[in-house]
Structure formats: C-alpha cells, structure tokens
Image (cartoon, rainbow, N blue to C red; front, side, top):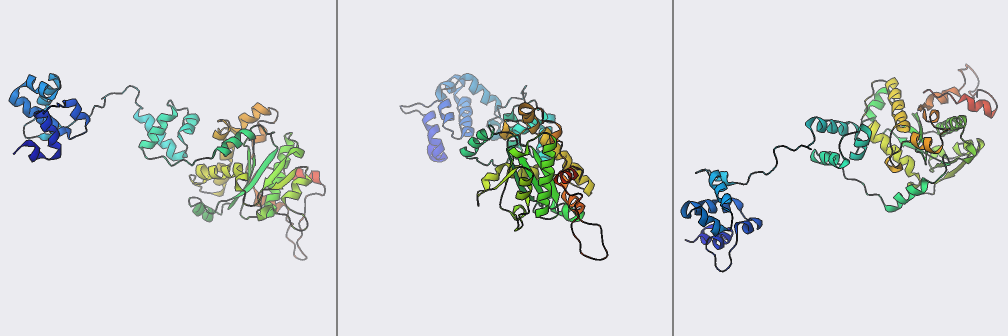
Length: 391
C-alpha cells in the first residue's frame, strides 16, 4: 500500500515531497501550509535513517542542521519527542515583575479603575497599554461603552463656559445598590444622595437624607449658595438646572428650590421632558460614586459612614483627575482659572440633611399646634444659620 493511501489527505503532501513529480515542495513550504508538522518531522527522521543526512536535506529542501536537530530529538517509541517546542525566550529583561503585576491586580480589584487611571493615580512605572494587557490576561476588563462624537464635542464647548455659570442638581437613589442596601437597613444609613455639580470644574457638593423631600432640596440649595457666596462667587451669575422630579417642583405658594435660589439672586431652569443627557455631568458623578465608593466600602457604624463619605468627596474635589477634563482635578481647574476661589471652596463636608430639617422644628409642646420656628426673621440671618457644614 502506498503512503498516500495509508495516511489519508495529509500524506498526499508528503508523497509529493518524498516522490516529487514535476513540482518539488520544500520542508519550509510544507511547514507554512500549516499541515501536521509532527508527521513531517517523522518523515524527515525516517528518510534520514535510510538515505543519510545529505540526501534528506536535498530531498526535503532544508538545511543539514534541521535534519540533525530532529535526529537528535527523536526518541524511539516516543512520538511526542518530535513535537514543536515553544520558542518563547527564557528571560525577558523588560517583563513586568511578579510583585508589580500583583500590585496592579490588587489595585484594580480594590478601586475598579481603568488602565490609564491606575497609571496616573498610583504612578505605575508602566505604560497604560502594558497595564491594560495585564488586566486582559487576568480577565479583569469590562466592555467599554461607546460614546457618540457629539458628546465629545460638547465637552470642548463646556470648557469655554464661565466658572459657576451652571449648577446641575439631581438626586441619586442609594437603596437600589446591592452592596450598600444591607448596611443601609442595618445601620439606618441615608437612602438618598442630593448632588450639586459645577459643570466646568466638576466641583461637587452633596447632602444625604432618608427621604425624597422638597425641603431637603431647598436646604441643600441654601447651604451651597451660602458656601459659594462666602468664598466670593457671584450668585447672580449662577443658573441652577434640575430635572422635573417631585423634590424640585414648586407648590402653589411658589415654595421649593426654584423660588429659593431666585430669592438668593440666582436663576433656575428645568430640563425638557425626556432629555436625560442634559444632566450628564451630574449623572456621571452618580455612576462614579456607585462604582468607586458604595459598591466597595463596608461601614460598621453611622460615624464611619460619614467619615468615609467625607474622605471620598475631599478626594473627588481635591485630588481625583477627571478624564473628561484632560486629566485635571476640580482643584487644578480652579487654580488655573480662578486662583482666588480655589482651596477652601472645595473643602466641602457632605451634609446630614435630616439634622438640618430638625433645626427648623420647634421644641416639643404639650398643647397647641406645631409650627416651624425659624432661627430669625431676615434673609441674611437665615443664610448664616446654614453655614454650619458638619454632618
């Protein structure tokens, strides 16, 4: 029986090699055909044992060193000895060390940062491409959301805006975060986050409460306005932007956040219905605080919650570089564009809005009706009362 009939289709190539008929295929050409290379090595060794070294090199179109190599590797009764070996170098001078690789993996699991942010934040001695490759090798990547070109163009437009011209305000539901919910119910932690973000610098001011309330939105607006006015920001140039949520609507007596900020000299506008991208600046903050804080932190007491929350927002305003703002933190942007207002303006402590609400309630009475008791009559005294920033 011929070799072609006994070995199938793969042997047809070898038959042309062993018994050329007009066209002779070299060993390298057969190798490039991605055929069974293990079988090719067996044929070379078998032919060399019968016809010698030089005849095999001529027949297979390869060098004598190639024939010698496979003869040396061949072990009788062990076909695996003719299998391909890895050509990977045993030593790579620029290979990332195991210690640094372990550090990158731990930082990724702890923070959830991407390759560029890990390199910038922790001053890693690697390129962001090397960090990304390590994350892919360990299965720690997630598909990146594609951003439309219009959103990128809008970022360039917003950089030209005046500082503190727009404050985007929204509320984040914390009770739908699986990692935070058991701690929230056990320790009676806040269920809602009230967020105010300045669009150009990214400076963020927050307050927390147990309810979605119009009063809490008003308290936060008063506190932020007083805080900005205290540090030299002109309130008449600010426009507060909110969605159409119930906590931002006015009642028939024109009471609510819009009336409050207008009374303090600022302006207010609602976004059009179903135009959710208009609040993208503050919605981005809500995604970041969930990924970087509420999905990772463990709280053992309410005091620890307030301490960690304060630390995170100090980090967010003072140190965290923002990729959408050319890797600058809010402090760096303020130092470049408004040095007089940088510094103390960003030292904001998250407010416990429930305590602010209790300050407006009267002391218990045994008879009569309870009415709100304000600290003093007069807008100036009222604003100063809200300058207390401790939670």
